[in-house]
Amino acid sequence: MSESLGLLGIPLAILAGTLRGSAPFLFVSLGECITEKSGKINLGLEGTLLLGAMTAYGVSFLSQGAVGTFWAPWLGVVAAGLAGMVLGAIHGWLSQQPRVNDVATGIAMIIFGSGLAFFLGKPFIQPQAPQLFTFEWGAWSSSPQLQSALKVSPLFLIGVAIAPLLHWFFRATRWGLTVRAVGDSPQAALAMGISIFKVRMASIMAGSFLAGIGGACLSLYYPGVWTERISSGQGLMAVALVIFARWNPIQCLWASMLFGGAQALGPAFQSVGIDSYYYAFNAAPYILTLLIMVITCSPKQTLAGSPGALGKEN
Image 1 (cartoon, helix red, strand yellow):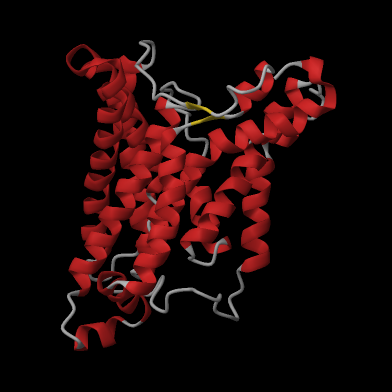
Image 2 (cartoon, rainbow, N blue to C red):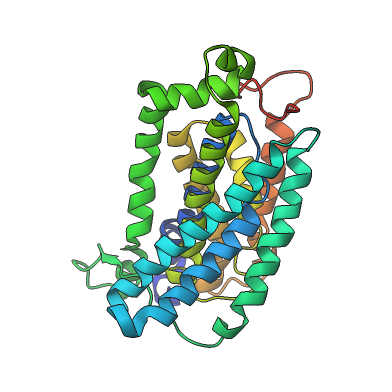
């Protein structure tokens, strides 16, 4: 954004940052919502996000000669989701073993996923991979700033569509009600003949698939590169986001946009020449995460919408 717009450039830059930066939050939070609805917690999504970003970027770069620069990024998106599913399968199996703690397993998966991404992604730090196309919703305007602000990724629109579909899935389909039954009362679900292990495994893998696509949003759209610090803790922040959204997929959409907007504050003020508190504004998403955890979490009461078996031992 240019300084020529003056202070008007700030909301415009925040809008641009929200549309660009909320997609990873959206996919990871929707994925974690699926996982937690089944009664499990996946703190390892930070590692999944990084592995997804690296996989998407690497596959896009390596496949551009075979499928072209348009399809290569989409192949990368699918590969990122599949990479996430692999980590999800590992986490799903480990976390359901006797006397195994979800939190400890999640931390182990962060280390494993990020370490694997860093090791395999070293050759892709310098090369430029084909990026996803964008919808130019600002083409009608003669303002370059507005045109830039209204560039929308197709992945963001896909995430927006998935949110109400997931809401409907959990409320109106047999499979969705089965996931909720397992998450609320595993013993009752077991008495109905439902396999707790299979339902939770499928939920964790599906959630990790979406988290992997969240990584693809980072490396193939915004910021559109592969570096080892590309996620900036967004996978862990998404766990707090799900709690803030009360395990409601539609509310995950609005919460993701809030987090995306908070993330855009620093660059927005910097774009109009306000550099004094750049690092303070950059800390906004982390401060927001801490505030949410402090305000909404209490050991004395159960949060509305929380699955009954969430966080309990196997």
